[in-house]
Amino acid sequence: MTGSDANPVATLIDSFVAAPTGRLEEAYQRLVGALWRDGLPTELALPAVPHLVACLDQVDEVRQGHLSILLGLLAEVEYPAADGKVNSAVRSGLDRYLVLWRRAPKGLGLSLALQYLVAHFPGDSRRILAVADELGLDVDDRSRLDRALLRFDPDDPEPEIGRAFPYPTAWEMDESERAHDRAQVKALTAEQVEAQWHKDTRTVLGFTGARAYWAVRHGAPAPIEPDSLAPRYPDPPEADIEIFRRHEAAFHCPSCGGRGLAFESGLARCPSCAKVYRITRGMLDVTAPDGGGVGGADFLSQLVKIPTMSHFIESKARPNFKRLCGFTWDGPVSAAFEEKRIAELVRPVEGPVLDLAAGPGGFTLALTKAVGHQRVIALDQMPTMLASLRDRLPQVPAVVANARTLPFGDDTLGAVMCWNGPHAFIFEDTAPIFAEIGRCLRPGGTFTTYSFRNSEDPIYRYFVASHHFPQSEHGLEMYDLDEFKGWLDQAGLVVREESSIGLAFFITAEKRAPGERA
Image 1 (cartoon, one colour):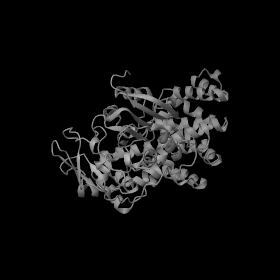
Image 2: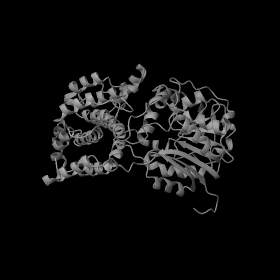
Image 3: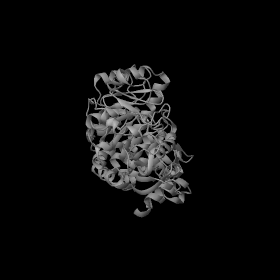
Image 4: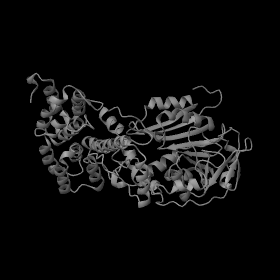
């Protein structure tokens, strides 16, 4: 193909094919932008597909990888509609894709890109999976491919939905957990089930595409190892009430705002309004006063719904999530690196140190090493997470609470850490939560956080946004870093230290002293 055809697509493809190594990404982005924008095809997309397919036989392996990603993006533009014009045009090259896939070195960019591409053709699942069998795909890759190639069956009485990330077979649930899942699904309408099915498909395609895109540009991804291992079936111990009493002055009543809670065996009482909050196995539930909410027997029933969730998060979900959102598929943000950064960044003044969105406690452990367990309070909205934390850290009190309303008085906390956590909030809640952190910190106290910014690359941003989680049902959204730091400033916090790796950022901000200018 040459640009002399007076065809804009031909010119763009020729420019990409001829681009020197240092200009290849620039030429590729121009080509993609002419055919695909934010998940939608341009008017040039359909006529371009045959040329892209033919070009696969004319270029080197690196360019083949790039073209395979682009063809996968185009195959997806009509989803969930089946057999659309663009998808059908891309599918016409399946024979070529399978031949290339057989030849491509396993685990490298081209192989992963072709796996992403062929995952868009469920009507050809037998042929595709036969090649996958020949190639001996890893368990996680095979699980994603199997799921992507399944069509939605409205007559299936027990569809498996909501368990797609990081790959379907990672969810090693026992029969009681699966029974809970089936009951949850039966409570949904047919429309909700179908919508979730398609979100799950988007999620597995998004993950497959994100990893392949990184590999095409940078080489083989590093193997994903667990950060740490929370207990599979946590058994949180009962706690000596003294672990709460040592922080008594910092607490305030979420109901009336009265400062100080009085801690007794099994409960905390507000001296001002007499509201009572239950403590179960070292976990104070402030979500509902007077014994309501998830306290007592109701609380324990929540713990057995998906008791292995904490183990799953630390062993499977979190290591994959931080590579996805950080664009760090080579794994530089290891557990050891994170522990070191926590020790370096968390600098408390007088007062308790709060681990906000503490989860199963993997990095609460690092925080206790840095500041001492006697200073730490762990807070999370999910009792299941805190059950694992309490099992591992019996000397650390835990609080079940919504971060938008922290149960602490003004100027009471010496430091707050939210490590790999802000993105777990509902996006619109982030600024109000930062305001709460600013309210509770003492002047000079620090807020330390690790999170992720949005990619400026529209392809990678699309892959991340294809993931659907409970807090991001419309697609995963990361932060604009300037906006993020603006929320900190509005909360009275001054950024003192900032660093980044890929799309991951690490920030420590300090609460301004009264009268201190921004």
